[in-house]
Amino acid sequence: MGKMCLKAKNKGLRSFYSAFFICSTVMALWSYALQLEAKVTGNCSNCHTMHNSQNGAHMQYLAPDESDTKPKQSLLRGSCLGCHSKTDGSAWKDPLTGAPIVFNSQQPSYNAVMGLSAGNFYWVQTEDTTGHNIFASNPESTLNEAPGKSWGCSGTNSCHENIHGTTGPPYFGFDTSRQGCTKCHMVGSDSPKGYHHLDDTGPVVDSSAEGWFRFLDGHKSGSGFGVAGIEDDDWQYSASATDHNEYLGASGTKTSAGGFSAIGENTMTAYCTGCHGNFHIEDDLTTGSPWIRHPSDLIIPNSDEYASAFGASGATGTYNPLVPVARPTLSGWTGPSGTVTLGTDLVMCLSCHRAHASPYFKMLRWDYKSWPGNGQPNGCNVCHTSKN
Ligand code: HEC
Ligand code: HEC
Ligand code: HEC
Ligand code: HEC
Ligand code: HEC
Ligand code: HEC
Image 1 (cartoon, rainbow, N blue to C red):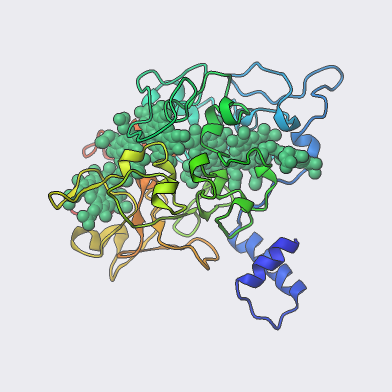
Image 2 (cartoon, protein in one colour; image 1 turned 90 degrees about the vertical axis):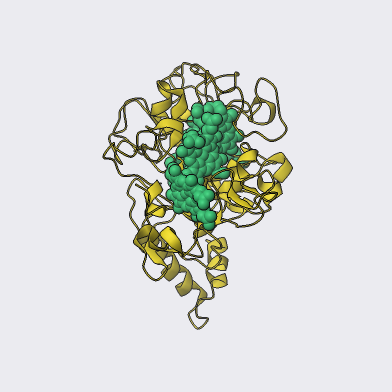
């Protein structure tokens, strides 16, 4: 409560209200109108077990591919996937703990089979190219490193070579035993640090103290960095022009490999290019020709075919959660915006990809491979309005 009051004051609300009134008003606004994320709530025993034993039986929530009932780190009642998975296709949130579901072992029946914002690991069970292959029992069989890998970290369990890891199911593991989820989430040099208990009420989540956006903390070489954004309260189970996550972007040099330390900003693109570094080398200054790879964190121009992107006229279009854009700054933002401003907002990695997995080739957000001609909505022409 104390921390939130301080933050509320920092947002510059009128000073003649008493501190108490400011806090209650602001918190009510946040919880009803903006519905932002907060830290975990509920009985400790929903999530933790002191001895991993009750009436002699183990206390673990098991993921569909798991059989390991041993006690877990932080005295938890499950691995990452144990809490974040379901065996049916319709649950998007655990009714007891409130955990968002990232793996339904049956095809997700919600959000047009897509799952939550990051997508759903359902799809990599049968098709490697649809996502990041987190399952140790069913690893990626074609790629032996992150495409576009530009630096560092090699060896059997390197985060830059595979996601599954070989030391068990997607499970708790830090430092040398990272695997699955913890290759991407909670990579701060001081982790584990109780991310689930940090106060990420925001609205803008842009610091280590808040656990960064979705616990996307920096890497050892980029400590102090992480992803900045605004967290939608239901992880885009419901999404619309005005109800969605927000992401920071940064237009800057595109001639060097990416990553937090190279880009120097807390953007989603800097995060992805921590492993896919070369995909940030996007223009060729020696010839002056425009692009050698599709730009990310480039401002969408208000000219040519782009002038009508996102249905825009006069540089203002409508935000489309199928094709998210990044914003050059989130400073002072109190919630998501329903508009896209051409000449200001940026195309980024997640404009085209889901972060976990999708039904489509290369974890795209729509069926690009068989477009045009498949009669499906296509995100490319949301920006490239004259190509279809
Ligand atoms: C005991 C159950 C449990 C375990 C184990 C668990 N989580 Fe969670 N997780 C939750 C709950 C509950 C939430 C929702 C918290 C909230 O609403 O803020 C959550 C939220 C999250 C979020 C979203 C945070 C946000 O800002 O919305 C991420 C990312 C996440 N967990 C990753 C992980 C990873 C990675 C692991 C393994 C290292 C893990 N979780 C282990 C229960 C669990
Ligand atoms: C390749 C990196 C990567 C891996 C591996 C990964 N995540 Fe994520 N995760 C992300 C990113 C990036 C986001 C934010 C996506 C967005 O905003 O659309 C995210 C979002 C989430 C969320 C919030 C829900 C949502 O859909 O936005 C949860 C919960 C979560 N991850 C849990 C997990 C768990 C559990 C695992 C392991 C089974 C895992 N993640 C593996 C990168 C990863
Ligand atoms: C909804 C699930 C959930 C509930 C409820 C919950 N925790 Fe946790 N807790 C977690 C998860 C998940 C982690 C470890 C992952 C991480 O670092 O975020 C954790 C980590 C911890 C840690 C170790 C990290 C640290 O901050 O030192 C302690 C201690 C802890 N919890 C105590 C508690 C207590 C006490 C309660 C009840 C007041 C409680 N937890 C309620 C999910 C929960
Ligand atoms: C921790 C390192 C890491 C991060 C961070 C990361 N990736 Fe990956 N990515 C990999 C590895 C390793 C592979 C190859 C193995 C696999 O597909 O599981 C891969 C594969 C991919 C693929 C091809 C999938 C396939 O199987 O053909 C795409 C597309 C992709 N990543 C996009 C992204 C995007 C977008 C982000 C940011 C949201 C991101 N990656 C963040 C390591 C990472
Ligand atoms: C304009 C849409 C778009 C953007 C933006 C985009 N990608 Fe892609 N990406 C694609 C498409 C389409 C493919 C499928 C292969 C192809 O056509 O090149 C792909 C393929 C990939 C692959 C797989 C490569 C392989 O060898 O299998 C990775 C990894 C990847 N993208 C990562 C990223 C990262 C990281 C970013 C941000 C720096 C990013 N993408 C931005 C559309 C995009
Ligand atoms: C969110 C907006 C956005 C989306 C979605 C998008 N693009 Fe782009 N694209 C851009 C921008 C901005 C440029 C660079 C414009 C410039 O040169 O100023 C670009 C450049 C390109 C170029 C190079 C054009 C040149 O002048 O050299 C190609 C080709 C391209 N995109 C194809 C695609 C395809 C295929 C997809 C779908 C997989 C896609 N784009 C999705 C915004 C987008």
